[in-house]
Image (cartoon, rainbow, N blue to C red; front, side, top):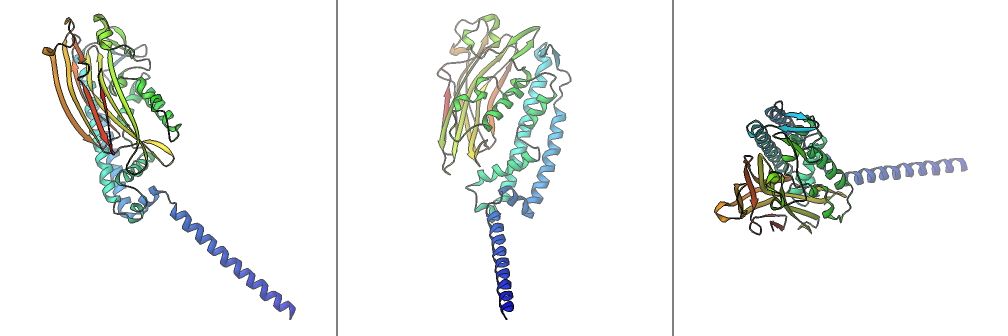
Length: 367
C-alpha cells in the first residue's frame, strides 16, 4: 500500500513538473515574441514581404543600370592621382556621376517610402514604433543587410577608381567613428568635418586631397580661405562653414542635424552650395537618419575673372535663393561652374543655408 502511495506522489510530482515546464516554455516564447526584432515582424507579414522582394529586385536592377551609365574609362591616372587635361574632357564624367547618383538616391528613397506605407498597416509593428520615420529606419536596415544602400552609386565609383579616393577614406573614418559613439558624443570630432570638399569632388581626389589638373599637382588646401590664396593658385582654395545642433526630438530620441555651407574651387571646376545630414540614436547606437529635412540656400555668390581687385564687387555677384525638401540621409543644393580663369567666392555675411527637420532648424553663414 505504501509503495502505491509513493508511486502516486511521484507521478503527481512528475506531472506537476511537466506542467510547470510547459508554462515556462510558453512564457519564454511569449517573451521572445514581445522582444522580436522589428525587421522580423516586417518580413513575417506576407504583404510586406512580397512588396519588399519586388523592391529589392527593382533596386538591384536600377543600380546596375545606373552603374553602367557612369563611364570612367576616359579618366587618366598618374602616380596615384586623377589627371585632368582640360574641362571638356572631365566635365561629362563629373556631371554624369552627379546626375546618376542623384537619380539613384531618389529611386532608393522613393522605394523606401513605398514600403513604409505598406508597413504602416502592420498592427504589431505600429504598436512598437514611434512614427513612420522609425519604420523607414528598420526598412533601411533590411536593405543594408541585403547589400543595398543610399551611398551605393558613390561607393561603386570609388571602388572603380585605380586610386585610393578621399571619398572612401572619409566614409570609412566616419563609419568607424559613428560606431564608437555613446549616446552623448562630441560632434565636433566628426571626421567628415575635416574635409570641406563636396561629395563628388571627393570621388576624384586621392587620400591626400591631391589631383593633377592641366599638368600641375594641386592640393585642396583645407586651411586657407579663397581670399587668402594667391592669384596663381586661387583655383585650389575653399571656404566651408558648418553648424551642428544636438537635441531631443518630439519622440524623445537624441538627434543631430548638420548644416554645411561651402564654396569649392578646383581650377577648372568650382562648386558652391549647402548640404544637410541627420543622425539619430536608436537601438543603442547612432545611425545616419533619413528623416524629412527642408534645405534652403540664399545670398550672393561672386563670379569674375581672376584680375578683379575687389572680390566682393556687387556688379559681379549673383543672388541665389533655392530650396529643396527630401527624406534622404544626406542631400545638397549645389551648382557647378566651369573654366580655369573663373573665380568663385561668396560675399561674407550674405551667403547662407538653413536646414530644418524633426522639430529643429540649423543655419550656417559665410563670415
